[in-house]
Image (cartoon, rainbow, N blue to C red; front, side):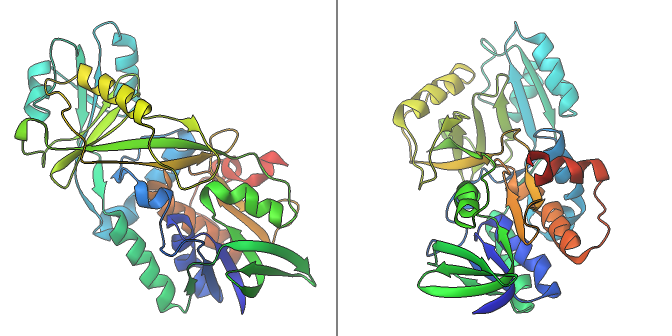
Length: 357
């Protein structure tokens, strides 16, 4: 089982990288689970709002815009921030940072009818946010990768990695894979993969993010509602196939695992959401959680390891993996091919693993 490029991780990072690397050489993707995109990629809020995130994420997301607008994976959603009457300064910062328009409360209620004017003091809105069909996006990249000959292997957890004669040998799912380069796109497990390869871990931190799915509040038609975020960014909600998903926006430290929602964390987040709306939460249709994995400076880590250039990091997207993946996977291919990237040099440097050397 020999290939030029072995990608560990079958989430959006690994599959999109496979699509861009496959024209450059033979590619194999190893996914530990029986299905692709099982962990964080399968539990995304599925929104493309390119101004959401730290400056590096925003730059990568904006650089992905042309791809998304032509991809057929977007549909209109909109984006709203709410804040309390005593938080005018914080509210105005959000208006500036996200390029939002301030609305009167009656105007906001036209867009988000369950807004509670007794508890909400300020509202702002923009149309530049879109629902992202994450399943379709993964399938698009998967088709591209397979069309160029990429091999996708599931149920193949990596158990050992050794280095010899300028090649890597990777044990996974009872098979041995021999490769020229390893691409570490293992999500919450990226540091564990580096350790198996004999490299120093960077210090990634998986943080749990929980979600509840509610029946349509008050029986409303939610199809035109935006994603709504509380001013302290400690809850958000978004329509989803006739229901409403609500998150407490939690960031609880976790070990890499198949995450699940904590009932108390959900209850506290739903209480914060209820303070800002007129319809109470009466029942949950479902709940789940995923792990958003961050580097020590909360900026993605994309590039060859400075100590071992044949080991390539694609990690730390921190919940922004879908909205930044077109720019990231193109950068991965450009770096491997030795081509000039369209990304600014300061962003490439900012996300390079060399900053941790």
